[in-house]
Image 1 (tube, rainbow over the protein chains, first blue to last red):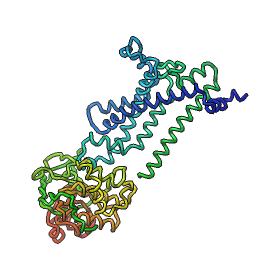
Image 2 (cartoon, helix red, strand yellow; image 1 turned 90 degrees about the vertical axis):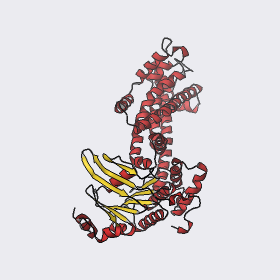
Image 3 (cartoon, rainbow over the protein chains, first blue to last red; image 1 turned 45 degrees about the vertical axis):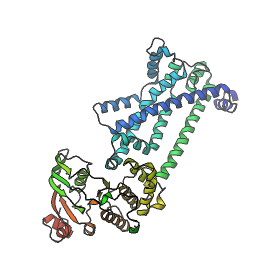
Image 4 (tube, rainbow over the protein chains, first blue to last red; image 1 turned 120 degrees about the vertical axis):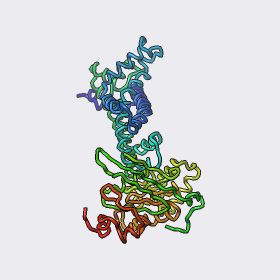
Length: 234
Length: 248
């Protein structure tokens, strides 16, 4: 195997050479996935906490639904967003299909159930511990929400990371709603699909290594922050 | 604990007013078909130190949670003579937030509506009062058991309660920490706070009690002045309990 066919060589050559195409792809990937996780968290954290704190008819059904949606196939999410955003669809007038915005929307739909369902579990566990003290202080559920979300912060960081893992790794949804347009909606996972089908395996593998390294790096950072804080705060 | 700094000038003096009495009218409590508290009629009045005594499972904590409003009775009702007064509760295992010691105090103040400007200063006073100044910035949950319980008492102190409930607050503590808690209880009481506390420690009850509520198997068997209870218990169970016999 010559050096140029060695995927690791290719990967490092791309990274060290600061290949502009690669940088664009990586930047767009991170932008789309981070924005999707941010938006999904803003919606799912309060919803998960609310599900943990309030009892209402249909609550169990909602929990089961969220748990089931954690396994929503990305292509199905992609298809739904595609139908919504296509010219003939209800949101077609905004012309969002095949834009990064469409990719963010699709990933929010994928990530939201994961963060909501896992937040519900974390907050419910903490609430079991805190409930009597908080009620003794005179708190109602609405006021408990920020307290519990804040005190569960380290567990929730892991939850958000699980959401980010899902967003950065999926290919089905962004492929369908983004279209893998070079320089516009091409991200790491869609590039890997493309390069593989072209037979350019070293480049595909190289991109895979970059993707894996980035995800590992982000997880390592979060883990360090969380462990240090946990040790300090008990 | 230093009595000379007490009471701090910034604390309202309203807590010297009389404490409204608490009335249980045929209150019972059931959970999943099990009757845990038989219909109970009881009036707790005056600014006394009431010790609820009895063996494990007698319903002491249950009675207190009903009084504090953490549980709703299955039948009967619980009423205060006037409006329900300011209350606080200290639990067997202190529940502290995952924040620093002082943040635990300012949190309770924020919840009870103390203006932001005053919180730090009052929290600092409470830390001083309970000997926790050096630990102000430490995460509350890495403090020792005794320190955690003192922090829980400091938090209750800042709520300025007319009634303080304590659920076996010393059962997991060493003698020095127990002394600190008992001193704190007495300071609350001297400051006009009514004390309602559970214990199964006879010696502690003798040290603290003005009156005793003795419970056995989900029933209130006795409610008398402490001296009377210890000298001439009316029920055989209470007599055996005081003699330290294991009859149940």
